[in-house]
Length: 241
Image (cartoon, rainbow, N blue to C red; front, top):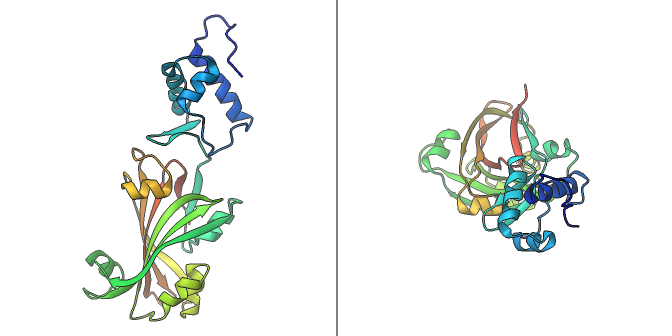
């Protein structure tokens, strides 16, 4: 469908903006879907690419689409409130939003901990940890990259359990930690590294939220140090008390 040229005084790019805005509003273009290329839109509306670019910029300014350098334009998605509380569990949080949680293991290994991880886990320098890196998704859309470190000496069989357990909570329960709670969460922001932007399917010029958290067992002993990265176009952190 081409824009109606009849309304006097309405520039072409505004007509194109209104047409695409209406398609987004009536779910013809659902959240997360990719818009046609500038060339395809120019052919559809019989205008030059500069006019299309102006309309897309206005859609982006109204937060209706996101423009990713090198990938194209996508219909903006609802921002997911990721709740941080005393017992933050990824799957439970995602299901509370009526979305389906899933994940993909990126790496799992035993390694020597860096100084920051040793300090967070209250371990001597040079201690070994089990480190799991995982991509977390909601309805198949990536929303977090999590790096989870556990003291290897305390959990000698945890690496094998993490390979097969559906969730970290279940793996820890099999290792003897029936419950754990969040002791501290620190939140900062920065631009994503190239591989983070690729995994999170986000533009490199938009920041990520970075959280560092420490989880302890019922006796107050540290069981996990976690670092998570969230794409700001899709996630905001909410603290619950």
